[in-house]
Length: 270
Image 1 (cartoon, one colour):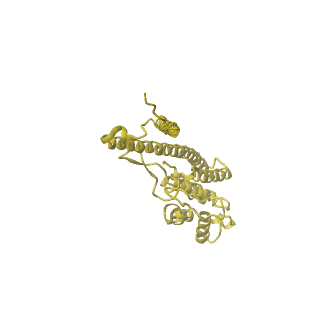
Image 2 (image 1 turned 60 degrees about the vertical axis):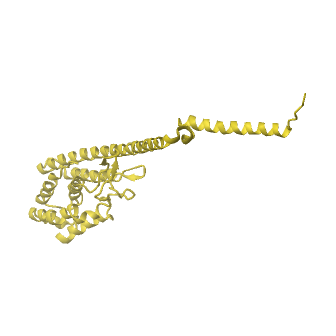
Image 3 (image 1 turned 30 degrees about the vertical axis):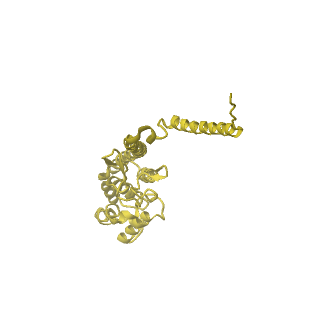
C-alpha cells in the first residue's frame, strides 16, 4: 500500500477559493433578486442576448414616459386649478362692472375688486411647481407676470405715462373730472389697448408664446402648459387695470361709464 501526501497549502487554498466563490455567487444572487433579471444575460441566453437588451431598453423608455407623464399631469392639474380661480374672479368682476354702469354700486368697491383681480393674477400666473413657473411658457425659470399694483413695475409705469401723455395730467389729478366720454373712448382704443394686445404687453409679461411640449407616447406629443401671453389673460388684465389705475382721479361720470363699458367685453375663456 502506497501513501500519498497532500500539501497543507493546497488544502488552505482550496478553502480560500471556495469562500471567494461563495461570495461571488452571493453578489450575483443579490443582484438577481433586486433586478429580477439574470446577472449575466449573455451567459444565460447566448445568441438571443440582443433580444433581451432591446426589450429592456423599450421598458426603460416606457418607464421614462410614465414618469414624464406624471410630471405633466401634475403641471396640468395645478394649471387647471389656477384657471378656475381666475375664471371665477373674472365673472365676479364682470358682474361688478355691470352693476357699476347702472349706478347701483359704490365705485370704490368696484375699484377694490379690480385690485383684487390684479393681485390674484400675479399670484396665480407667477405660481410654480417643482421650481418651474407654470405660466412662463418655456422660460420656466423667470417669473412671467409683472405686478401692476406695484407703482415701480414697468407695466404700471407704462400705463401711467400713456395716460399722462394723452391727457396732460396724471390719473389722480382733479382735472380728470373734465374727461369726456369721447376722450376716454379714444384713449382706451388707441393708447391703452396696444399695451395689452400689442408690443406693450412686453411690459407685462416675461413669458414666451411657445408652450411646453411633452412626449406622452412613443409617437405623440402634447402641449402641457399655458402661457401668460394668451388672449384671455390679456383681456382680464385690461379689464382690471383700466379701472384700478384710473379710479383715483375725480373722473366724470361719462368717462367712468365709458371705462366700465370698455371693460365689459373682457370676459375671458381660456
